[in-house]
Image (tube, rainbow, N blue to C red):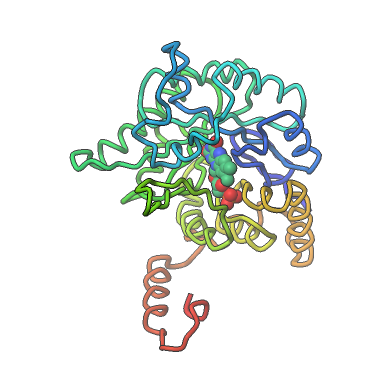
Length: 338
Ligand SMILES: Cc1cc2nc3c(=O)[nH]c(=O)nc-3n(C[C@H](O)[C@H](O)[C@H](O)COP(=O)(O)O)c2cc1C
């Protein structure tokens, strides 16, 4: 069974990779991940705020940054101080490269065009095999149009990909009016892969203290459905590779994501919950299932449930929508209609 896949110009023995998280925040964890059989490792992000603080040579008020309600902000709470500043991050990349043979994908997290993007060059120099750009952004002001937001994201990707030889993946949120169009713009700007999707870590409210309380709830398989939809829509229409992040917890999740069009699957929550060795178990289960079903390779299965393989995707989409709504009867369980 050939599980081989290509991602960001790398040939990987199988599609299971470690998503950006503390699971690769030190060398022991990185070695453990390699022993568990990951095909590649994505490091946790270095944030724009950290680079700017370093550049300015002063303590920046990272916690008071205007994005403190965003995913970026919630990684960066007062309680969870990511102890890697930019220099330590570069050292971490070089040490990780020395410690393991699997490819190392660094991650930069930023949303404004400017002084931090030069850091991609440093990341390349430190030896990373590829770079994931996390462009999480939550527009909140009424004079910032979709066009302004999307142009800025496009410019960031362009500026980073022009400044560095590394293949760039862009990790996106699903909340765009026309995601397929944004994907095209990012591809034209130089992105070599899309990572679908960022999760929201939405703070709860402490009603007595009148304070937001950061929450970090790990995913479950129900989050995969949104990814499946968009993988299936985007597959086969771009040169870019597609990575799935969010809700891959078991064999069937993995198979569905590949059938929808994923080239690689990034896992985090499942590994935090049940240990990094789960990645090897899921890989073997996928392999066994594919053998039973007489697939010859991953390539044969990839995208088999995508829109571009469907005879009339518009009709399927509208048809399913209608059927679901019209088949609902009181007493039905949700799963019967989903
Ligand atoms: C504790 C934790 C830390 C994370 N840190 C980062 C990060 O530094 N950069 C990033 O892009 N994503 C980060 N993520 C998001 C994951 O990479 C991943 O996209 C998300 O958890 C969805 O995948 P999952 O369902 O397999 O958990 C983090 C997630 C968790 C749970």
